[in-house]
Structure formats: structure tokens, C-alpha cells
Length: 246
Image (tube, rainbow, N blue to C red; front, side):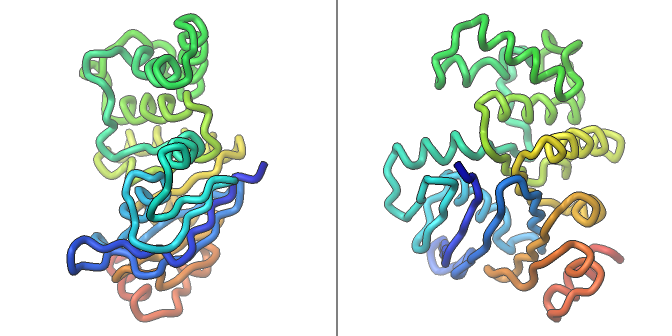
């Protein structure tokens, strides 16, 4: 089954303020897509709409065979969230659980896995992100980069078809950013669909298959990274990139 993502005419407002104005985009299965743009341009809102965390006012979002609409059912929302894992800037780990227990929790509670099944899978995933030796550490004992890699392992424990990453390196210093970006590159090589809201322009240029620039509630430019980042065509994209690359 294809797990491409198609966003069609999605509009989202808060009161009188329109955050997303008839946004449309398509992401192929296994693609890495970077969403760039100024703060307040709608990037994180779009990501949360794609995962069903934010309801939207009009339009459709198709994730594989699931079709999100403004009045989507609980089953549809659950299916979309199973298909697309979400990773946040602030980790959102349970502080009272070890790294291992954080990764085990959702498979135990949501998927009904046995303790042994969940434990074996969690250890395998922590190894995959380079943290098996820290399995019994609590979040307070981990660096920011390590917490973020636990969060990635936790998202992978639900066996999603894709990951939505909301500025997951923005709170980290350069060395810790490198750890997390290396983990994302490994997932990319494994064929995982990745949608990244990021200010890491150089990483987007290197790793993304396509780049979308969101500003003022819409997509102002899209295409291959080298074209969009190095040779933007629209004044709004040129202004944004001139500021972030200065």
C-alpha cells in the first residue's frame, strides 16, 4: 500500500487569523521533504494538521488509504496517527519512565504488545539510534540530543510509515544537533518518509528531496533543494532566504 501524503486546499484559521490558506502539496512515499519559512508562516500548524492533532476548516489530507477531512472520524484520526509518527521540539518524554520504558509504553498501551515483545523491540530501536547503553537512564540523566533520539525511537515503536518532525534540533547545540541529524539520515536511507519543519537550511539542502517554503499562510516556492535554496524565484522566498543565510 502506498503511504504518500497529499494535502489539498487545506485552510486553517484561529479566529479572524488565517494560518493556512488553501495549501496543497504532495509527498511521495519514501521522500524527505523540508518545510522552510519564517516563524508564523504555518509550518508547524500544517504538520499538526497532517497528523490529525489540529482540526482544519476545509480541504483534505490523504495519508495512504486514510482521508482526513474537517469532520474526520475517530477511527480515521487513529489510523493517520498510526501511519505518521510525530516528534516535537521539546521531546515530550515521560520523566518518571526510563528511556526503555518510554519506548515500550505506546506498544504496550495502544498495540497490546506483551512486556517481553515491547522490551525486545524497544532495545532494538534504542540500539538503532545509538542509545542501547542508556536504556535504563531517566530523561533527566540524558542530554538534549539523547532525549531527542529516544523520542525518535519512541515514534518508531508504533511502526509508522512516516515521521513528522517539528523543529526537533532547534533547542540543541551544534554537536547534539549533529547526533540527531545523523539519525534522520539513517532513517532516510532506510526508506522512511520524513517531513521536517526545520531552520537547518544546510541540512535541508543536503538531505531533502523537495523543499517547500511557507510564508503568509501559503506555499510561496517549492522544488528541489538546490533550485529553491540557491536560486529562489519569488520575492518572498528571496527575502526569507537572504535573512536566514546572512
